[in-house]
Amino acid sequence: MNKENLIIQIDSIKNAKRIYRDQGAEFVLENSELFPYLLELVFENKTKTAIKASWVLELVCMESVELMAHHLNYFSINLRKCDHESMLRPLSRICFYIINAYSSSESNEIKKYLTHENKIQIIEANFDWLIEDHKIATQVFAMDTLYLLGLEFDWIHLELKLVLEQNIITGSPGYKVRAKRTLEKIEL
Image (cartoon, rainbow, N blue to C red; front, side, top):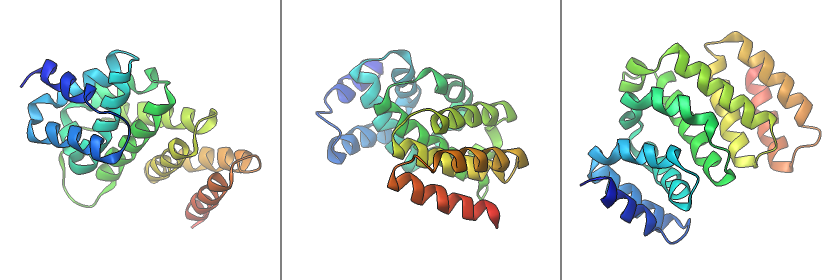
């Protein structure tokens, strides 16, 4: 298998329905040597292929986030280059998967390879997504990721609390519910 095979598979995704995204994810999970190419597709251009690749990457990481372990530098460096709304939700969810694995009490590859610099890049991207005008799903995963990172970096909870208190006033009903829940967890 090579990158061209992956592009054909990704381009065959008709729309965002889960069944099509699952087919792409299964293809990559069965051919894990394609994982670096999948990452390249997400970050190398702003085409429909990149958007579909981000959908597939999310599902691959949901199933096996440890595939990302050797690619954390590439992922975290490129995070802030993406600005297409259809890509931000999957990327914010992947950040959550990475930080959730890192925060886990179980030993895993993410813990071995996630550097301080990677964490800082993830923090910056997630605060950007939370502060800027993005869809609620992207912001919810950013809240969750930042909350977990705030368990390691005290200043994050202080900043997160300020952002949430400021934005909760004008936020959507979904934003308000999740922001209140996050604020309650910070207060504990």
